[in-house]
Amino acid sequence: MLFRSLAAPRQPETRLRGPLGLRKRVAWSPPVPLSEVKATARALGGTVNDVLMAAVAGALRRYLLAHGERPPALRCTVPVSLRAVSEMRALGNHFGLVFVDLPLDLATPRARYAALKRRMDRLKRSPEALLLWQLMRLTGAGPRWLEALAAAVLGAKASMVVTNVPGPREPRYLAGQRIQTIMFWVPQAGRIGVGVSVFSYAGEVRLGLSVDERLVRDPERVLQAFGDELEALAGLGGEVIGRAGADPSAPSPPAR
Image (cartoon, rainbow, N blue to C red; front, side):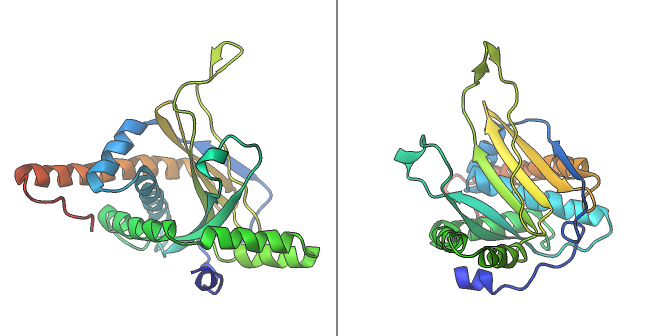
């Protein structure tokens, strides 16, 4: 799978990928109750991450359509923690990367969710994250030209970085004051000008965008579309529950 990813063609030029400018913009969404996302995931037979990734893909599709572009399938890089559960409190980073194809070319939330769930399930059984980490480790220990070449090759394979980080489940306090919101921005290397951050904290989920202003001048439209996609997926989950309720002996059908 790693060699197939490295041999994949360069990403197409879209409003989400192209020559970069000098200015960056950041934006973040209103909070979404994590309980609602979990309910949608249970209804669709997947995970919270499956639902959020499908909502991100749908939001980006809506954004391109709104700007008159025909959305192609786009690839993103997703950081994956390589720590064991017993090592989660250790300081420092230890993560690899995987490539995930976002099905922006599929027209319905049902089709996008099903495609992403299949891909995420396959990646969970894949050693790709560890292999890519070893590759970055080796090139980082070599001459600078080799490190730059590896960064350029990997950067050409993706249009964005997308990461979903589960934060503290309970509120945190600083100097006696409750921390209301936590947000972060993913690093972007090479020609990647779009970073998508999903963070959960104290029962809420937010989507954050860090974008190159030359590519994306109106990131708030992506945030609005993200909320619309979550509502569409919740409606899809409600349909699944409704069909199961009509015939309790029938298994819930998979998302199509």
